[in-house]
Amino acid sequence: MTSNAFLSVRAEQTRPFYVMELLARAAARAAQSGPAISMVVGEPDFPPPAPVIRAAQAALSKGDIHYTHALGMPELRQAIAEDYARRDGLLIDPERIAVTAGASGGLLLTMAAILNPGDEVLMPDPSYPCNRQFVTAMGGVVRTIAVDATTAFQPTADQVRQFWGPKTKALLVASPANPTGTMLSHASAVSLAQAVRELGGVMVVDEIYQRVVFEGAPKSLVSLGEDIISVNSFSKTFSMTGWRLGWLVLPPQMSGALERLSQNLYISASSLAQRAALAAFEPESLAVAEDYRRRFTEQGRYLLTALKQLGFALPSAPQGAFYGYCDVSGLTDDSYQFCLDLCDHAGVLMAPGRDFGEHHGDRFVRVSYTKPLDLLQEGVARVQRFLKSGQA
Ligand SMILES: Cc1ncc(COP(=O)(O)O)c(C=O)c1O
Image (cartoon, rainbow, N blue to C red; front, side, top):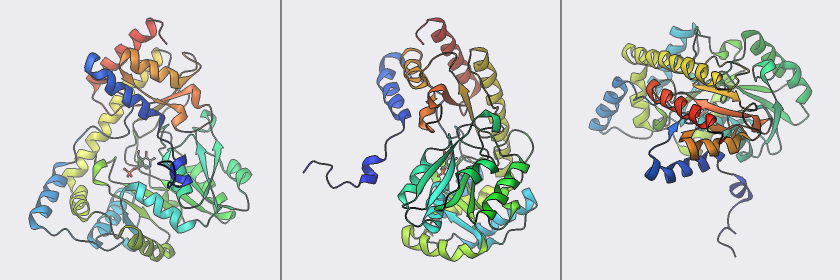
């Protein structure tokens, strides 16, 4: 019996991200050459707003850290609902809100709630890599729709109709999306929702970056109807990645199922994080989140313009999140090797396109601009020297 003989096929087949290889190489070279500049991370570089920290400290001092209701503390569900009313003008019954262990927990519970073994979920390629695992972990089958810049890397209603089969249950999209930062236009979102409705499925929208949009304040796509499942999180908006807290807005008839699943699978989301998150909707915290949004916008504007001048094409400009999906086919014919060389020779980290899908992954890299401007400037200077040196 080999040491891995007891592992499931699922465990064996879940591969690490290619970017892990880059991080290992960067750690190995750091002792000699200093730290690499990261344009690879998918999390804000900022602390959570001060009221969130204070609320966590107060909760800890009180010691009232027990299980909560499986769908979250009623006052937090209420606060989330009130935020939709204030920000998007949407009246959502707090009963439709399920507080989860991050958007990740929300996606996993959603798949647990809607999939029978063999059911298919459509999603664009490229997209957030973990989405595939959420589906397969629950016995589902992923069907990808290859998308490109002609549709801002989002699927169209025609494509959804074309790819929909007898076993298809759901469409999973994100707006803004990872790795592209591109959004669904309102018209596209409406036609996607309509197509999925006609096909008898469910549309799941990952809106984790909904409040990290560069211009305007688009309404949540839950505005399209009570049948939409929206996934959201405190991670990116409030710089609370490690607190592991997110939420779902559910069709009314799904709350009971989510409650049973959540109760059984992990009882409740962290109650310390929930108590802290209540303070995220205070005016002071919302102002901090707005400042972070503005800084991502500035950092992105700088980085993407500077990289464009170095030959990183941007076929579809991001409208939110903190990513750019750059076509580097003018610089290399293998974006993964390019990322490895950039790491080894320049000390700059970018994520290879193949981490996000198979469709032209070798042409693309994802850059993130969560680091402060001075670091990004140093990173750009390093990339420039690397390209001039002919090591690409
Ligand atoms: C599109 C998308 N969805 C979900 C997640 C997971 O977020 P959370 O920290 O809330 O689990 C991420 C994290 O990068 C993401 O980019």
